[in-house]
Amino acid sequence: MSQGYLEIISMNGQASIQDLGRLNAQHLGFSASGAADEFAFLSANKLINDKLAANEMSVEQDNKQRHCATIEITLGQVSFEAKAACIIAITGADCQAKINNVAVNPWQCYQLQAGDMLDFSMPKTGLHSYLAVLGGFTCQKAQQPWLGSYAQTINEMALGFTGEKLTVGSKLYFSAQTKVLTESASEKINKPKEANKPFKAPSQFYAQQNLTLRMMPSSLFLQMSSEQQQRFLTTEYIISPDSNRMGYRLSVSPAQTLLTKSANEKILSEQLRSRCLLSMPVTYGMVQFPDNEQPIVLMKERQTMGGYPVLGTVMQTDLFRLSQMRPGEKVNFTLINHQQAQQQLMAFHQKFRP
Image (tube, rainbow, N blue to C red):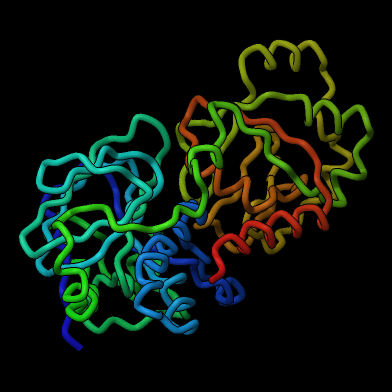
């Protein structure tokens, strides 16, 4: 199969290939990985699906595009040169993208021609931007998925299963798109493709500075006294600078620290903490509670085992929102039950089905 590619010309941020991750590999000791913000990831592929709906894509093709690997760009500052014509979509943090030095809007489809330049700047808000292409990206010719995914995990890159780290000179391959582009030849180059946005205002999905994380409580949390539970739920936390794709570390805000010091009793009693000495499997969204009582919310590149006490698990759609928040921004927790969380997630995914 003929392949074109985008080449990275310059890069000062970070970029990696991400899809929905290897969801059935944790028992083997590997991170699930995958797109940090699934809302932006799925939206990018849906924009392409909607553009090609007129070409009567089959349900199988539609579902395949929905899971296609994209480029996850963190803090922008990367430039690409198209070496072949292709249809792309841009979503996520607004990196003030430009095609051939002409500003273009995010959350839309565009057509690139061979030789076109695509530039991303530092976003004013948010962290991750997503660049999707018809058929998906790979970082090697004729690359096959590893454990069902093309997702790159920084800590596992040395294993060599998902290609090399993206850097200047890296080539991002995609399948030839001659037929689709021929049908669109009469359209103006770089004109936004007509496609329905999954939401009329994508920005409404994201939190503005403060985010309330809806958490399903663990059995440990339910054993805490009502006073201890309320102290945790009423504490305002700040995202720490050492947060990353493995986990978001939260610190107590200065005002809350004074209150905490005045109340000598810890939120989690030593008696309850002593019951959590053994390591256990961990999953996406678990809220670990170390001795310093600074929570850690586990994210896409989490480890597979952990020994810290766990107070609960944050519902997934709130984790997508959390992934776009920067150090210094604030979060707090509230409770939700499993049924409510499941209904929210089902409603979320329903918006992206054909």
